[in-house]
Image 1 (tube, rainbow, N blue to C red):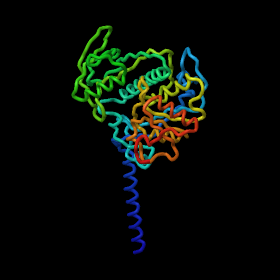
Image 2 (cartoon, rainbow, N blue to C red; image 1 turned 45 degrees about the vertical axis):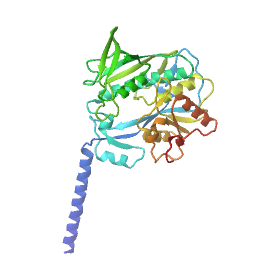
Image 3 (tube, helix red, strand yellow; image 1 turned 120 degrees about the vertical axis):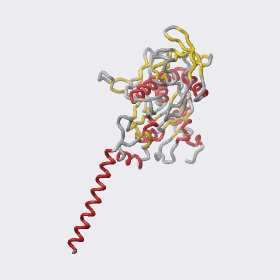
Image 4 (cartoon, rainbow, N blue to C red; image 1 turned 135 degrees about the horizontal axis):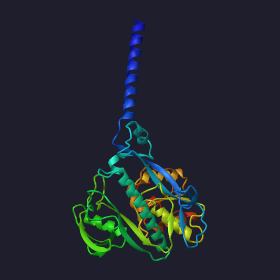
Length: 362
């Protein structure tokens, strides 16, 4: 009887283990509708990278002007997204991210709105990166007192979007509702003010001909703001040609780091001293710093890079997590001037304004 009872228990244990193994196998194989957002690569904008031809060169290069020696590190921060509509994450792969404060699990549609393909998102991020580099250069030169003019053009049109059949790649945008567009920030603001269901009259140049059309901005599914369904590129008439060599990183959030890297290279002395500073934030050509996504993940990336100071957009104050890396000095900034002042204060041994600017519990 004892032997029979032990055998039954053994079979029950084996059955439970088999069911558990099947559950784990299914969780590892069944795709989920979620993606993982986690800290991505960190790049020193004052350092060097490997170029496409296999050689190495500076991240930021400026032609026909004097560049000054730099000290310290000035990092741009990125996030990595694991999972997309074509390569979904399994349910099992989500478990480690749930318990890691540096990672976040979110619906795939938050990163890839329905109707937008993976290729379209990559193209859009590449255009955002190119635009952010140009805006950063314009902001830096203007901060240094140099005049900069801008031209907005269509880099791509999303099929079935508000601009489909109206705008084409290469069109130059001139006016909104009859008024000249100063820069991309103003265009985005006017689109946002019109809102979904509203209308804006866009004046543009197509193959040398001036035209005008009415667009109705829409909020894409999974998106948060109205868009006109076109990727806009900004072309600036800079006093010196700037070349930023980063091909594997997309999006607009490195603008602040690029602008500060240019300021550091183009001015004598060292703003950083021997500090390691990490920065994130979009930037307009007037030097205004804008909010970004993935703040938590970039904060942990800054901590892992042993940053002495982490610069973040003041507009992201509501996104500051309560669980933050111990000892990480955080300085929210609203513009390029505040960012430079915060770094100079830290380099001089002073304490720049911190998260108290956000009026949150520490």
